[in-house]
Length: 591
Image 1: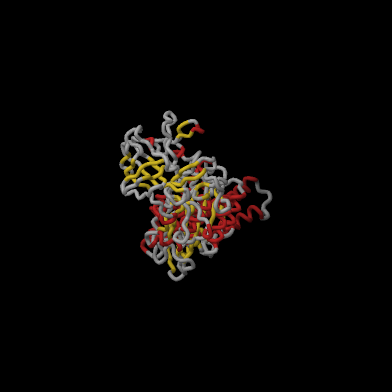
Image 2 (image 1 turned 90 degrees about the vertical axis):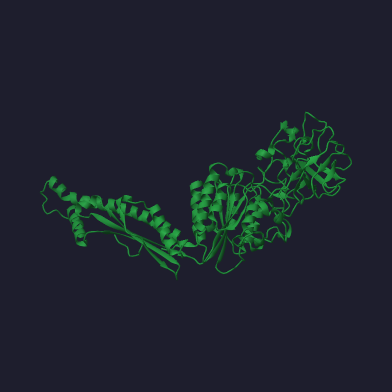
């Protein structure tokens, strides 16, 4: 068997005349008129056994040849894709090609011997072509003199001349726990390996990571993105007096400021998070008022400012503690608000952010133009001093487990564009699944991380996205989810009309979402505007069941239907990420 398309052929190492003789003999014996009809059965069987063996051998060895072809093609394809990522370094390129080929085509596979790889590079067309031939022995056909056959295969990859910036948006919500998060890690790391070239010249390829759940953790960039809060000040002492005097060097508070105290050791009753039902002599207010301040000290008064805080009966201060400013509108370290359970709460900001509101809600305007909202999901509580909740019947460490009553800021932080594969894969490995789903926040940051309007935030040149519509540049967002989007915000607190699974009502604000849209609707608005900037969007649904809501979002958010995928299990997820990575990387199997 032979094909002149350069892809594969089988060639038996005997002359065509010999083959024709064998086949002619088989035809005459099986189908031609018998010259001697008086022969016995034994004579007939003796005459047919050799052509029968030849036909069986042809079928068996042809099947083995196609199996060999398949394995050769897979190994060559993998080797060519790997070599394409270092095309312009001849030594590394050829070493990479041979290494990947050997990894995917074991020595002595089916007892075949393989010719050295023929590697041809066309610098004008940006292609790599690889050819090889495997010689394998036959089985049954050897009885008619056909002892071996050659199986040849070739492949070609074409490298498009493009710089690539990719944001990878990964769902790390609680429903992703267990094997699902492990499947996601493996798939995402495979994408990084394929997309990020080892060689960043003459064209670069960079990836940004956006893990999301009920928020997106922007880490040390929080102040620049959602505005500075002043943070908290360290306490070095509190007197036992009426009123209590707090020492916090260079605290910066003004008289009548409202403050919140946490994590004091010894004089634990002064902590706003503490209420001991066995000792009702003192229940701290949800806020204190600063009075008679000096540079380093201030007196504590009740939240209304009229009553002194008498600490003379408290245990002595031992060490530690912090104090931060409380406001009744977003912007301070602590936010005081009425909850959806009709209680008044004080919650602390986090390094997570929530959704932007106003005219720039669905744009990629720079934070310097329009800040992105705080994320007040951290109830300020010390593990050593658990909150008392009489409605629950006792002490409850809600913040420490964070699942039933509150939605904590995810620990995994964003990673700006980088070509550092080890860094990206380490961050992926450290992802933990928890929290509810603000899918639109993931979509937003999938855009922001490759938006030139956000470039000023990032420290290094390789972190900074290039301008839109630059020649030889492709921007791509890959957005993955496994469930319903259920969490929206108002004033940086989870809104009371958020969906099921978004946390308890006493941690939500007594207001509906600021933008008047659910998370899916907000996500689609962002997708539409992102695509208007010529950003390619791939969407992936993982184990979403029959949810038409999610399917509609995936289809409508993606660039087109060919960019929308659904994975039912971990193997499919890995295959989808692999397919997308090859498409993004601009390495095409052209032959």
